Length: 373
Image 1 (cartoon, rainbow, N blue to C red):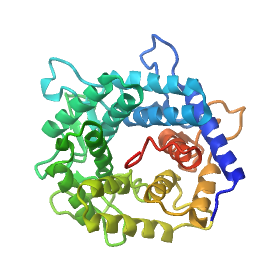
Image 2: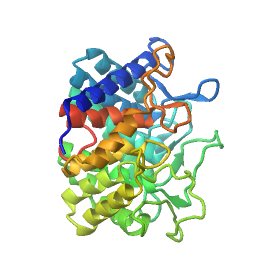
Image 3: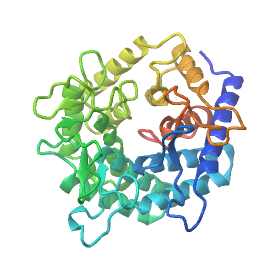
Protein backbone atom coordinates (compact mmCIF):
# COMPACT_ATOMS: atom_id res chain seq x y z
CA UNK A 1 0.00 0.00 0.00
CA UNK A 2 1.40 3.40 -1.02
CA UNK A 3 1.02 6.68 0.84
CA UNK A 4 -0.55 9.26 -1.43
CA UNK A 5 0.46 12.91 -1.81
CA UNK A 6 -2.67 14.15 -0.07
CA UNK A 7 -1.83 12.17 3.08
CA UNK A 8 1.68 13.61 3.12
CA UNK A 9 0.27 17.12 2.77
CA UNK A 10 -2.14 16.56 5.68
CA UNK A 11 0.62 15.11 7.85
CA UNK A 12 3.00 18.01 7.27
CA UNK A 13 0.20 20.52 7.83
CA UNK A 14 -0.37 18.79 11.17
CA UNK A 15 3.35 19.26 11.90
CA UNK A 16 3.22 22.96 11.00
CA UNK A 17 0.22 23.68 13.21
CA UNK A 18 1.64 21.59 16.07
CA UNK A 19 5.03 23.32 15.93
CA UNK A 20 3.35 26.74 15.77
CA UNK A 21 1.26 25.76 18.79
CA UNK A 22 4.40 25.10 20.83
CA UNK A 23 6.09 28.31 19.69
CA UNK A 24 3.03 30.47 20.30
CA UNK A 25 2.54 29.12 23.81
CA UNK A 26 6.20 29.03 24.80
CA UNK A 27 7.41 31.61 27.34
CA UNK A 28 9.41 34.25 25.45
CA UNK A 29 9.95 36.73 28.29
CA UNK A 30 13.73 36.81 28.67
CA UNK A 31 13.76 37.49 32.40
CA UNK A 32 10.85 35.24 33.30
CA UNK A 33 11.93 32.14 35.23
CA UNK A 34 9.91 30.04 32.76
CA UNK A 35 11.70 31.36 29.67
CA UNK A 36 11.83 28.57 27.07
CA UNK A 37 9.17 26.47 28.76
CA UNK A 38 5.81 25.60 27.19
CA UNK A 39 2.57 24.16 28.63
CA UNK A 40 2.49 20.42 29.01
CA UNK A 41 -1.22 20.29 29.83
CA UNK A 42 -3.96 22.84 29.51
CA UNK A 43 -7.60 22.27 30.38
CA UNK A 44 -9.76 25.30 29.56
CA UNK A 45 -11.12 26.67 32.79
CA UNK A 46 -9.31 24.03 34.82
CA UNK A 47 -5.92 22.55 35.54
CA UNK A 48 -2.77 23.47 33.66
CA UNK A 49 0.96 23.06 34.22
CA UNK A 50 4.20 23.67 32.42
CA UNK A 51 6.56 21.26 30.70
CA UNK A 52 8.85 19.15 32.83
CA UNK A 53 12.28 17.70 32.02
CA UNK A 54 11.27 15.02 29.52
CA UNK A 55 8.73 17.26 27.73
CA UNK A 56 11.48 19.79 27.09
CA UNK A 57 13.80 17.13 25.69
CA UNK A 58 11.28 15.75 23.22
CA UNK A 59 10.11 19.30 22.49
CA UNK A 60 13.65 20.11 21.38
CA UNK A 61 13.75 17.07 19.09
CA UNK A 62 10.32 17.96 17.69
CA UNK A 63 11.32 21.56 16.99
CA UNK A 64 14.52 20.56 15.23
CA UNK A 65 12.62 18.01 13.15
CA UNK A 66 9.99 20.60 12.19
CA UNK A 67 12.66 23.20 11.42
CA UNK A 68 14.25 20.93 8.83
CA UNK A 69 11.02 19.50 7.40
CA UNK A 70 9.40 22.91 6.94
CA UNK A 71 12.54 25.04 6.49
CA UNK A 72 11.54 27.28 9.38
CA UNK A 73 14.36 28.63 11.62
CA UNK A 74 12.00 29.86 14.36
CA UNK A 75 11.34 26.27 15.36
CA UNK A 76 15.04 25.57 15.91
CA UNK A 77 15.32 28.68 18.09
CA UNK A 78 12.32 27.51 20.11
CA UNK A 79 14.04 24.15 20.59
CA UNK A 80 17.26 25.74 21.81
CA UNK A 81 15.25 27.81 24.28
CA UNK A 82 13.66 24.62 25.60
CA UNK A 83 17.12 23.21 26.27
CA UNK A 84 17.94 26.49 28.00
CA UNK A 85 15.20 25.83 30.56
CA UNK A 86 16.22 22.17 30.86
CA UNK A 87 19.77 23.26 31.78
CA UNK A 88 18.38 25.07 34.79
CA UNK A 89 16.99 21.81 36.15
CA UNK A 90 20.35 20.04 36.46
CA UNK A 91 21.89 19.98 39.93
CA UNK A 92 25.34 21.46 40.55
CA UNK A 93 24.64 22.51 44.14
CA UNK A 94 27.72 21.98 46.37
CA UNK A 95 25.34 21.12 49.22
CA UNK A 96 23.85 18.25 47.22
CA UNK A 97 27.03 16.41 46.25
CA UNK A 98 25.29 13.03 46.24
CA UNK A 99 23.02 14.27 43.46
CA UNK A 100 25.55 16.16 41.37
CA UNK A 101 24.40 15.90 37.73
CA UNK A 102 20.85 14.81 38.53
CA UNK A 103 17.97 16.55 36.74
CA UNK A 104 15.00 17.93 38.66
CA UNK A 105 11.51 17.08 37.44
CA UNK A 106 9.66 20.37 36.98
CA UNK A 107 11.36 23.51 38.21
CA UNK A 108 14.67 24.44 39.85
CA UNK A 109 12.80 24.17 43.16
CA UNK A 110 11.46 20.63 42.65
CA UNK A 111 13.17 18.37 45.22
CA UNK A 112 12.73 15.09 43.30
CA UNK A 113 12.67 13.42 39.88
CA UNK A 114 11.21 10.38 38.21
CA UNK A 115 14.26 8.55 36.88
CA UNK A 116 12.73 7.76 33.46
CA UNK A 117 11.72 11.38 32.97
CA UNK A 118 15.15 12.63 33.99
CA UNK A 119 16.77 10.12 31.65
CA UNK A 120 14.81 11.66 28.80
CA UNK A 121 16.09 15.05 29.91
CA UNK A 122 19.65 13.73 29.58
CA UNK A 123 18.68 12.30 26.19
CA UNK A 124 17.67 15.82 25.20
CA UNK A 125 21.12 17.08 26.16
CA UNK A 126 22.69 14.34 24.04
CA UNK A 127 20.59 15.24 21.01
CA UNK A 128 21.39 18.92 21.56
CA UNK A 129 25.09 18.06 21.36
CA UNK A 130 24.61 15.98 18.22
CA UNK A 131 22.67 18.75 16.51
CA UNK A 132 24.72 21.76 17.55
CA UNK A 133 28.17 20.36 18.32
CA UNK A 134 28.10 22.11 21.70
CA UNK A 135 30.17 19.87 24.01
CA UNK A 136 28.16 21.15 26.97
CA UNK A 137 25.27 18.92 25.92
CA UNK A 138 27.34 15.74 25.93
CA UNK A 139 29.02 16.65 29.21
CA UNK A 140 25.64 17.19 30.88
CA UNK A 141 24.38 13.83 29.55
CA UNK A 142 27.52 12.11 30.87
CA UNK A 143 27.14 13.72 34.29
CA UNK A 144 23.54 12.56 34.47
CA UNK A 145 24.57 9.01 33.57
CA UNK A 146 27.19 9.02 36.34
CA UNK A 147 24.50 10.11 38.82
CA UNK A 148 22.14 7.41 37.56
CA UNK A 149 24.75 4.70 38.08
CA UNK A 150 25.29 5.94 41.66
CA UNK A 151 21.75 6.69 42.72
CA UNK A 152 19.21 5.70 40.08
CA UNK A 153 18.84 1.91 40.40
CA UNK A 154 17.47 -0.42 43.04
CA UNK A 155 19.45 -3.25 44.64
CA UNK A 156 18.46 -5.57 41.81
CA UNK A 157 19.80 -3.24 39.13
CA UNK A 158 16.47 -1.99 37.78
CA UNK A 159 15.83 1.77 37.54
CA UNK A 160 14.08 3.27 40.55
CA UNK A 161 10.66 4.85 40.04
CA UNK A 162 11.98 8.12 41.46
CA UNK A 163 14.54 9.78 43.71
CA UNK A 164 14.17 12.53 46.30
CA UNK A 165 17.07 14.96 46.47
CA UNK A 166 16.02 16.84 49.59
CA UNK A 167 12.95 17.19 51.85
CA UNK A 168 9.76 18.74 50.49
CA UNK A 169 6.76 18.03 48.25
CA UNK A 170 5.64 14.72 49.69
CA UNK A 171 2.62 14.68 47.38
CA UNK A 172 4.39 13.20 44.33
CA UNK A 173 3.77 9.55 43.44
CA UNK A 174 6.97 7.71 44.39
CA UNK A 175 6.43 3.97 43.91
CA UNK A 176 9.85 2.50 44.55
CA UNK A 177 8.25 -0.76 45.60
CA UNK A 178 7.31 -1.14 41.92
CA UNK A 179 9.32 -1.67 38.75
CA UNK A 180 7.87 0.51 36.03
CA UNK A 181 6.92 -0.78 32.60
CA UNK A 182 8.09 2.55 31.18
CA UNK A 183 11.74 1.94 32.08
CA UNK A 184 12.42 -0.09 28.93
CA UNK A 185 12.48 3.16 27.00
CA UNK A 186 15.65 4.14 28.86
CA UNK A 187 17.58 1.63 26.76
CA UNK A 188 17.37 4.13 23.90
CA UNK A 189 19.39 6.77 25.73
CA UNK A 190 22.09 4.36 26.88
CA UNK A 191 22.49 2.97 23.37
CA UNK A 192 22.68 6.41 21.79
CA UNK A 193 25.34 7.43 24.32
CA UNK A 194 27.30 4.35 23.25
CA UNK A 195 26.88 5.20 19.56
CA UNK A 196 27.96 8.78 20.14
CA UNK A 197 30.98 8.15 22.36
CA UNK A 198 32.04 4.61 21.48
CA UNK A 199 32.29 3.92 25.22
CA UNK A 200 30.81 0.50 25.99
CA UNK A 201 30.16 1.38 29.64
CA UNK A 202 26.81 2.74 28.46
CA UNK A 203 25.73 -0.70 27.24
CA UNK A 204 27.40 -2.84 29.90
CA UNK A 205 25.92 -5.55 32.09
CA UNK A 206 23.39 -3.18 33.69
CA UNK A 207 21.97 -2.45 30.19
CA UNK A 208 21.63 -6.14 29.36
CA UNK A 209 20.03 -6.84 32.73
CA UNK A 210 17.38 -4.15 32.21
CA UNK A 211 16.56 -5.50 28.74
CA UNK A 212 16.38 -9.08 30.04
CA UNK A 213 14.09 -8.11 32.91
CA UNK A 214 11.90 -6.08 30.57
CA UNK A 215 11.14 -9.07 28.35
CA UNK A 216 11.07 -11.75 31.06
CA UNK A 217 9.13 -9.98 33.84
CA UNK A 218 7.62 -6.72 32.57
CA UNK A 219 6.09 -8.19 29.41
CA UNK A 220 3.02 -10.30 30.16
CA UNK A 221 1.47 -13.27 28.39
CA UNK A 222 -0.93 -11.04 26.46
CA UNK A 223 2.01 -9.17 24.91
CA UNK A 224 1.67 -5.91 26.83
CA UNK A 225 4.22 -4.49 29.24
CA UNK A 226 3.03 -3.90 32.79
CA UNK A 227 4.50 -2.49 35.98
CA UNK A 228 5.26 -5.20 38.54
CA UNK A 229 5.96 -5.37 42.25
CA UNK A 230 9.71 -5.26 42.90
CA UNK A 231 9.56 -7.91 45.61
CA UNK A 232 7.41 -10.48 43.80
CA UNK A 233 7.64 -9.66 40.09
CA UNK A 234 3.84 -9.83 39.95
CA UNK A 235 1.47 -7.31 38.39
CA UNK A 236 -0.26 -5.35 41.20
CA UNK A 237 -4.08 -5.37 41.42
CA UNK A 238 -4.17 -1.71 40.30
CA UNK A 239 -1.76 -0.07 37.86
CA UNK A 240 -0.26 3.01 39.59
CA UNK A 241 -0.51 4.87 36.27
CA UNK A 242 -4.01 3.75 35.30
CA UNK A 243 -2.99 2.10 32.05
CA UNK A 244 -1.04 5.08 30.68
CA UNK A 245 1.66 2.83 29.24
CA UNK A 246 -0.36 0.08 27.61
CA UNK A 247 -0.36 0.84 23.89
CA UNK A 248 2.10 3.66 24.58
CA UNK A 249 5.05 1.52 25.66
CA UNK A 250 7.08 4.68 26.32
CA UNK A 251 9.51 3.69 23.57
CA UNK A 252 10.23 0.33 25.20
CA UNK A 253 10.10 -1.69 21.99
CA UNK A 254 12.40 0.86 20.34
CA UNK A 255 14.70 0.31 23.32
CA UNK A 256 14.67 -3.43 22.67
CA UNK A 257 15.52 -2.78 19.04
CA UNK A 258 18.53 -0.83 20.32
CA UNK A 259 19.44 -3.68 22.67
CA UNK A 260 19.39 -6.06 19.71
CA UNK A 261 22.24 -4.13 18.12
CA UNK A 262 24.48 -4.95 21.09
CA UNK A 263 23.06 -8.23 22.40
CA UNK A 264 21.41 -10.06 19.47
CA UNK A 265 19.06 -12.17 21.56
CA UNK A 266 16.05 -13.63 19.75
CA UNK A 267 13.84 -13.00 22.79
CA UNK A 268 14.18 -9.23 22.26
CA UNK A 269 12.81 -9.43 18.73
CA UNK A 270 10.14 -11.88 19.87
CA UNK A 271 9.00 -9.42 22.54
CA UNK A 272 8.69 -6.61 20.00
CA UNK A 273 6.68 -8.81 17.64
CA UNK A 274 4.45 -10.07 20.44
CA UNK A 275 3.68 -6.53 21.60
CA UNK A 276 2.83 -5.25 18.11
CA UNK A 277 0.59 -8.24 17.46
CA UNK A 278 -1.31 -7.47 20.68
CA UNK A 279 -1.60 -3.78 19.82
CA UNK A 280 -2.98 -4.21 16.32
CA UNK A 281 -5.36 -6.97 17.48
CA UNK A 282 -7.18 -4.35 19.59
CA UNK A 283 -7.33 -1.61 16.95
CA UNK A 284 -10.79 -0.15 16.54
CA UNK A 285 -12.48 0.59 13.23
CA UNK A 286 -11.81 4.29 13.87
CA UNK A 287 -8.09 3.57 13.86
CA UNK A 288 -7.67 4.21 17.59
CA UNK A 289 -6.22 1.60 19.94
CA UNK A 290 -7.70 3.14 23.12
CA UNK A 291 -9.26 6.42 24.22
CA UNK A 292 -5.88 8.16 24.36
CA UNK A 293 -3.95 8.69 21.14
CA UNK A 294 -0.59 8.80 22.97
CA UNK A 295 0.38 5.36 21.69
CA UNK A 296 -0.22 6.08 18.01
CA UNK A 297 3.03 7.93 17.16
CA UNK A 298 4.99 5.43 19.26
CA UNK A 299 3.50 2.51 17.32
CA UNK A 300 3.96 4.18 13.93
CA UNK A 301 7.57 4.88 14.87
CA UNK A 302 8.51 1.32 15.81
CA UNK A 303 6.81 0.00 12.66
CA UNK A 304 8.87 2.46 10.59
CA UNK A 305 12.09 1.56 12.41
CA UNK A 306 11.42 -2.13 11.76
CA UNK A 307 10.95 -1.40 8.06
CA UNK A 308 7.38 -2.66 8.00
CA UNK A 309 5.55 -1.79 4.77
CA UNK A 310 2.92 0.93 5.10
CA UNK A 311 -0.48 -0.73 5.40
CA UNK A 312 -4.12 -0.01 6.06
CA UNK A 313 -3.81 -0.45 9.84
CA UNK A 314 -1.04 2.13 10.07
CA UNK A 315 -2.91 4.56 7.84
CA UNK A 316 -6.06 4.21 9.95
CA UNK A 317 -4.01 4.91 13.08
CA UNK A 318 -2.47 7.97 11.45
CA UNK A 319 -5.87 9.33 10.42
CA UNK A 320 -7.11 8.80 13.97
CA UNK A 321 -4.16 10.82 15.26
CA UNK A 322 -4.68 13.64 12.76
CA UNK A 323 -8.34 13.85 13.75
CA UNK A 324 -7.38 14.76 17.33
CA UNK A 325 -5.72 18.07 16.45
CA UNK A 326 -7.51 21.24 17.54
CA UNK A 327 -8.21 23.24 14.37
CA UNK A 328 -10.17 26.26 15.60
CA UNK A 329 -7.88 29.32 15.13
CA UNK A 330 -10.03 31.42 17.45
CA UNK A 331 -9.04 29.13 20.35
CA UNK A 332 -5.45 30.35 20.57
CA UNK A 333 -4.37 28.28 23.55
CA UNK A 334 -5.43 25.03 21.91
CA UNK A 335 -5.08 25.72 18.17
CA UNK A 336 -2.67 23.17 16.70
CA UNK A 337 -2.51 21.24 19.97
CA UNK A 338 -3.61 17.66 20.47
CA UNK A 339 -6.70 16.35 22.24
CA UNK A 340 -4.67 13.45 23.57
CA UNK A 341 -7.08 12.07 26.16
CA UNK A 342 -10.23 12.89 24.14
CA UNK A 343 -11.39 15.15 26.98
CA UNK A 344 -10.92 18.56 25.37
CA UNK A 345 -7.61 19.27 27.11
CA UNK A 346 -4.33 19.93 25.30
CA UNK A 347 -1.47 17.60 26.19
CA UNK A 348 2.03 17.93 24.74
CA UNK A 349 3.05 14.30 25.30
CA UNK A 350 1.90 12.83 22.01
CA UNK A 351 2.17 16.19 20.24
CA UNK A 352 5.98 16.17 20.44
CA UNK A 353 6.23 12.48 19.57
CA UNK A 354 3.92 13.05 16.60
CA UNK A 355 5.98 15.88 15.16
CA UNK A 356 9.13 13.75 15.31
CA UNK A 357 7.52 10.66 13.81
CA UNK A 358 5.63 12.43 11.03
CA UNK A 359 8.79 14.28 10.00
CA UNK A 360 10.48 10.88 9.85
CA UNK A 361 7.79 9.20 7.75
CA UNK A 362 6.87 12.11 5.48
CA UNK A 363 10.02 14.26 5.38
CA UNK A 364 12.71 11.56 5.60
CA UNK A 365 14.21 12.95 8.82
CA UNK A 366 15.67 10.01 10.73
CA UNK A 367 17.63 11.83 13.44
CA UNK A 368 15.38 11.20 16.42
CA UNK A 369 13.64 8.26 18.14
CA UNK A 370 15.67 5.91 16.04
CA UNK A 371 18.16 3.06 16.21
CA UNK A 372 20.77 3.99 13.64
CA UNK A 373 19.70 7.40 12.31
